[in-house]
Image (cartoon, rainbow, N blue to C red; front, top):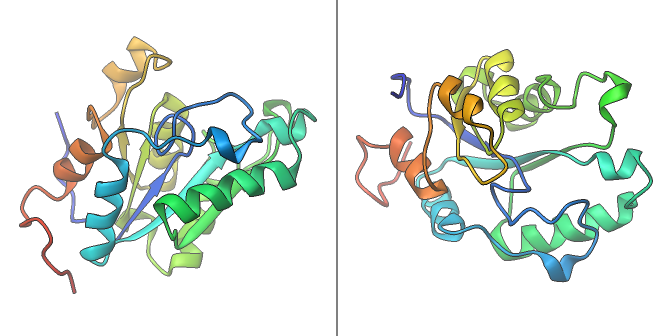
Length: 184
């Protein structure tokens, strides 16, 4: 069951498995494929004045599997096809680095909040795994889990908000608003 919150002023998306089909350690822009309902949902959010951004763990950089340039090229392709996004936050670290930016830590969300000029409590975070939900909760933001085949059953059970698709997640948070209405 969804917890009742104020309408978010910004939505931050996990990249792989939420915005685009998860291609492990993707460094090839030609492999970018949007997840279902993403494109139309992003347009609706932008048309209602909601800021949008991306918060993504990219440990392939820290592991030496992909370069920062490769990840940047993939992100540019996503931005061209689905954006423009107001903010991008990327964590290149491996889990063993114990950094504050890698989800489930809230660092990327908090930094995106500063860049967007909105409070963390005014942000919704859409993601496909428990670390996305945990990062949002740690930041004081509203998480919405959008499960995929990689999402564990216990992550779904423990998430405060669950939606089947990005458009369902948008509907969950903006249920009281007519489609396409302008927000002030």
